[in-house]
Length: 93
Image 1: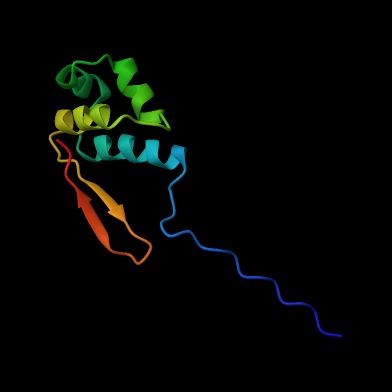
Image 2: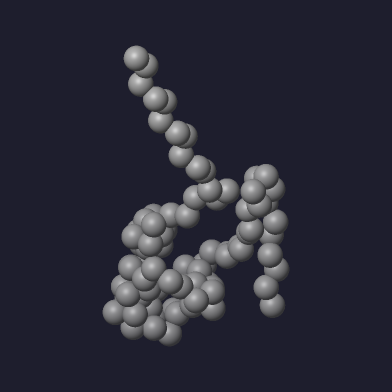
């Protein structure tokens, strides 16, 4: 008797990083750029505690993320990735 073959798992069009991974990404970017939370907070008109919370937050407002990026001196792009892999840049006002 042969064993039944397991069904392949369905793949999503674009895997989403876990909230913890996304937050680590912000912190790692800041550290890679040699920035401290205190220095970034001063440039972003935030407190160090707010920067710390932002770096751990799962759901970020685009305006807050833009402010964080500007304080780091980096750009921010929003790109939709379609099921066929096509990347569509989104221009926000």
